[in-house]
Length: 169
Ligand SMILES: *[C@@H]1O[C@H](CO)[C@@H](O)[C@H](O)[C@H]1NC(C)=O
Ligand SMILES: *[C@@H]1O[C@H](CO)[C@@H](O)[C@H](O)[C@H]1NC(C)=O
Image (cartoon, rainbow, N blue to C red; front, side):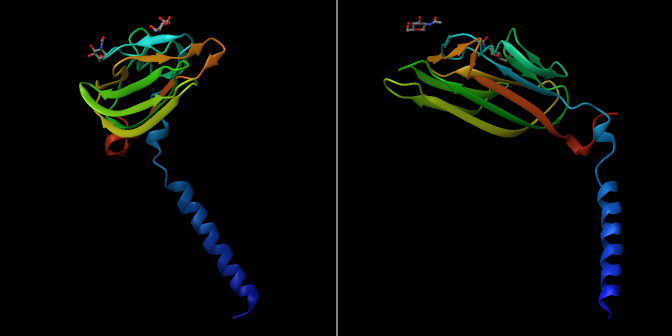
């Protein structure tokens, strides 16, 4: 086979591939905005046992699932969600936070250093049903560092996939 023929075959295969790839993504998924939130803490906050962290600076709240008054995210749709949280402790302070789904414990972030500022973070991917609540609460006592110009403590989450691959009609 001549080199030119091989090149032509490769070109045809590549074109076919591009057509298949561009047809593959689920069209409906792009038609509904997926819920996403990202929030931060702009003040010093002592969080005691089982008290929820009320992140007060809202960077993004697509779908209004996050409530800055309570610090609680309520899932608007069934689906698979990613949550991320990061925090900095006040100097010598303990940082011990838990992520909850309703009353169910999911994961923690812990830091404690002396004469310095400890930081910790964690992330999870979990499945939620519509109405499930996700929030960060204190485990023991945490001293969180925050300021209007020093936002170290953040909490973010977003819907990765709708259950069954499509948003509700
Ligand atoms: C947090 O607790 C520490 C130790 O009791 C105290 O010194 C500090 O003022 C408290 N911070 C806030 C914001 O209440
Ligand atoms: C934290 O939020 C959860 C979920 O809404 C709620 O059940 C719990 O009572 C809250 N904790 C406090 C101390 O308000």
